[in-house]
Length: 41
Length: 457
Image 1 (cartoon, rainbow over the protein chains, first blue to last red):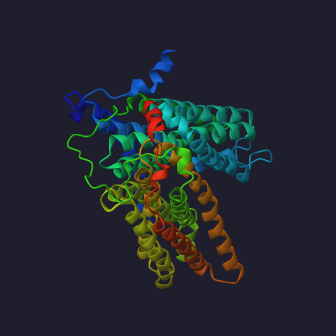
Image 2: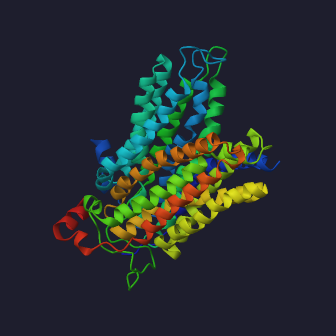
Image 3: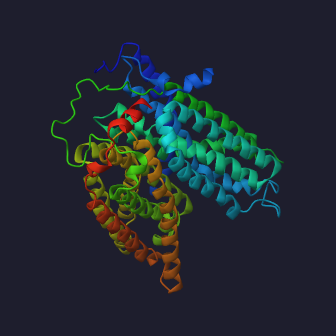
């Protein structure tokens, strides 16, 4: 009953879904990293 | 009727060709929202000036009053995860995520009303009770679904979702501060409008997760995946009913393992800012804030790293690493103070916090190994009570010992030494509990009708 993991239509969905959660998370991580660098200044 | 049909578990069964890699973003949609709880403290100071505006007025809320909002929220998280775990498991992830979105969003809106009429009790009801139920439902809702989609890498799958909970504050804190800045006027601090906007944003974001999420069809396996011919000693292919799991010593050993790991980590995390300033005089509050941010990054990264690693070295071994390496790190922290090495101090604390996050993220897969997949979400819900207890033990211990040391005339920079040894002792208890874990006796396994009913559900 194994199915193909990724159909051709899945590529766009994957980019959108991961972008939807990844972009805000990356923004937050970068902001936190910049603040964290103050520890070593 | 249409909504009930949309939320029904049968409507979420994935069609052939569905990519399982769409499920982690669905889980992250929920966890990136509910993890906002870690950043709720950004509202504390503005909420003490709702009336006084520029400074706290006599009728304004006090910090101790506001502290209860978060506490009630975390207690409700534990209670709702435990009590509603079976409902989540049997109703499917979409219904649970939808309900979590409604509760978490509504929690903010009710709190906005509380701010508007200046009633702390309405805020307790809003963010604390209603929002707290959303926290609990949201936290456990994607766990078993992810485990079923990733039988080959359950640790990595749940690690991704729970990483989102750890990283949510990175988004929530700056977003909340920015929103309050936009809504603030000379006569208004902007908290009420910020709550309304956050409630709507979080509801929409979580709804996207509930729309995307799918459960695999019965019997589905990843392409090329072959279950081990020789089952591993501590990995069962059987299933244990949620209330039966509570009767096993294994559940309570894992409960102690999680509780001790979290207690020790919270002890450091809660005092990180003051600890670095007192152990290393000269470090400013700005540098200390940077230190806390760095620890939060390691807390988040550790959730993914350690949970993923557990797929290769096993869950029990992963917790052995947490406890042995953790004991070494806690005992090493006083030495870093003695030699005045900030770098070594930061390194030790970063490793500790990575393992604190790793403990949260690895435990669902540990439960799956011991009790099977059928009720792992519900069992995880009950295990969350260990977090609630740890939330009391860790801060109380570190505060008590720090005060005791200072009252005994110890210099501030040395006041944390004994505390670190006490936290290391907690890890020794966790190490023993982990060593006691054996595979679950077959008398606890589900059989015949009960298993068929669970599969039908």
